[in-house]
Amino acid sequence: MAKLYLKFEQAVLKEVTVTQGGMVTIGRLPDNMIQVDNLAVSGHHSKIYWETDHYVVEDNNSLNGTFVNNQKISKVTLKDGDNILVGKHTITFKDEWHEDEPEQRVPTAILPAVPQMEATVVLDTKKAKELMAQARALRDGVPAPPPAAPAAAGPTASGTMPAVAPTPPPPPPPPAKERTGMLTVLEGKTDQPQYVLSGKLTVIGGAAQATVKLKGSMFRRPPDVAAIVRKQDNKYFVASQDKKANLKLNGADLDHQQELQEGDTIEVFGVKLNFEYHD
Amino acid sequence: MNLTVQVAGKSDLGCVRTNNEDNYGYDTRYGVFVVCDGMGGQAAGEVASKMGVDTILEYFRKAGTDTGKYPVEGAVLEGVSESANALASSIRLANRSIFEAASKDAGHAGMGSTVVAALVKGSFLSIAHVGDSRIYLIRKDSIQQLTNDHSLVMEQVRRGLITQEEAERSNMQNIIIRALGSEETVEPDVDDMVAQPGDILLLASDGLTKHVKDNALLSLVRGAPTLTQACDALIQAARDDGGDDNITCVLIRMVEQPWYRRWFGKGNPQWQNSI
Image (tube, rainbow over all chains, first blue to last red; front, side):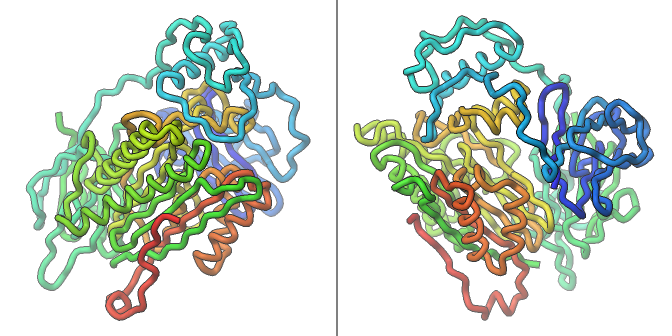
């Protein structure tokens, strides 16, 4: 077994395990096990898998290429500690099978030391904010004196905190205007002519909880959940949930998850819906 | 196709502790499942986690028998289902009961609890959590953690202040930044999803997840013939790794059931109150 750590600059965004015989796919689309939501990354960019007795990374003819330790590759064997560059994100490969002695790297002294405690401790919101600010100061190299009284178990009172200037919130993601999608019924029987997709999850089906309620007919009952539309990072993705529902996107059968674009037509269980963004 | 649930749960003292501050409960009649991990000295942790489980079960039993409507406690969250909001309301109620009990009784001062809860209605699944207990989804041969720990180290990882590896070695892993009962109000994280036949949900306290990593959880659950044996295997694995905390897991499997089985089949255990 091996671990993959998806990183952007220093931050670890995700940790994924790949097993012998297993495969991990990397790409911009949400059906990848490691989704890297960046335009520099192709939809299905590359994959990491077990081949006979070792792990390999293979590029899927991606537009911008896959790099291992700064070398452009098409397919290469991975070894412990390799860095795979996909767009601007790095995936670090850790082979846990052959792992060497625990590396003598910087210990966790990045954090202010606290006495080792066994019991769980709750920080109230204010103290938690103070500790976050302190950790940020440490990372940024601003000398922050250690907590004054080590006897005060763990989180210190605000009076003893180092004078850390109120640090700005973490770099905000590029300001994207919140977009709301809308489905308009073009054909077929549903409970409303139009649906504003304000929720994170929109269910299309016959169930009472479904947002877009399919009516079906006396002879043909719709599946409880025929398809779902999920909102993620300001985008909408449609996926089939029941083969009987025969989900089509712009006339073509859809068996995986797909991002919706303005003007797309979804067909499900005899109902035709038009997707567009709504201002 | 209609989905029904099978469930198994178990809680274990672990190898070091002398009292069990974890608790769990469920009621399949209302589709609600809860795990709580209490904290606070002199048995207060046990009281807090039990109050958490009982209050949440009670909320859904009452709503189920009274009107079928879920009373709203606190703010209504936008963009999530009624079920997810019901979970959030039940958790806010549990928070208030624990907070009030803690402020009334000096012996219980400082008590608190984490919570993970799931509400299953057919194939509709809502989850909610506060603290560092977790929910995993096991689908086919993959496992996915559905909750983000409200712990100081994981918050620092999310903000890019430390790495995952540093977090795993940190001596601050036991500090959580949200809990039931520590402040007057609490905001749970909630989410909605649609289950597929064969999906398994794992609700667990950190006594399990500290010791048993994701892929081991997956293979232990997949390798056991029944959910009860899977619970036993998970707990044994945590004990074998040291078991320095109480260990609790609840497994919920979504199964496809033909109509005749639903009508005439023998029932699974329907509920389990807090222990």
